[in-house]
Image 1 (cartoon, rainbow, N blue to C red):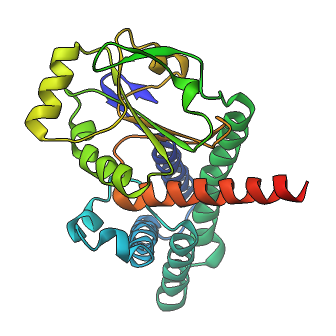
Image 2: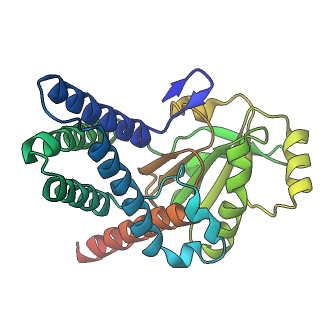
Amino acid sequence: MALGPVVIALPRLFLLLGVIAALLTARLLERRGGASLERPLWWSLLGGLLAARLVYVLTHLTDFREQPWQALFVWQDGYAPLAGIAAAATAALWFIYRHSYRPQRLLAPLLVGLTAWGGLNAVHDALRRATDKPLPALTVEDLQGVPVTLDSFRGQPVVLNLWASWCPPCRREMPTLAAAQQSHPAVHFLFVNQAEAPATVRQYLSIEQLQLRNVLLDLHGRVGDHFSAPGLPTTLFFDADGKLAHTHLGELSSARLGDYLRALQRRHTMVGRLSRGG
């Protein structure tokens, strides 16, 4: 979702709306009388977020081993929702036990926030599945000016990255994508530059010393328009049949990229088993 120059990934927006719903519910209960719920609610929410991030990092230690400081990049995607919910509930129960808060008063805001967050995500996922677009038959160019059709890459899983050299998050995530391209030869990585001049793209790749395959030029931004990408970077993950499996808006960490690639591999393996069984 784009708010002027600011682009907010929908999962983060839904989380923010869930927190707002919880705080508004707490404020409504306070007006009806009783102790302030602000302190225990904020501590419960903060504990849940920190626990969700910590558990995610601990279950992805291999991905964070080379760049452990990325564990502190809390603005990136990468949380364990169930761990967060359990931690928030535990913190709320601690306040109920130690400070005599009425259970229904403190748990109600958390339940409202959780319901709002979960409901928005469920609706979004349902709408996304209903409107998924396959790998299109759009023609772009490689760095030599040779036309390339995107759907010609079907047959293997595809990671399609929409990027530009002026975009700081694009630049930060590019080494991660470059390393993944080297270590996953069975996956097509397509780096589709959005509306920049070929000389600008070549200069950027040369300065950054990036050895990338399949750098493609979308001179008029038609691929971004086709997928209604609200901002850059946007990364789309397709299975071997060209069906869209996942969409990620914003900077990719190595851990989240690994999650998506493993999900693609599981999907590829499952489809292969079904076809052989048929």
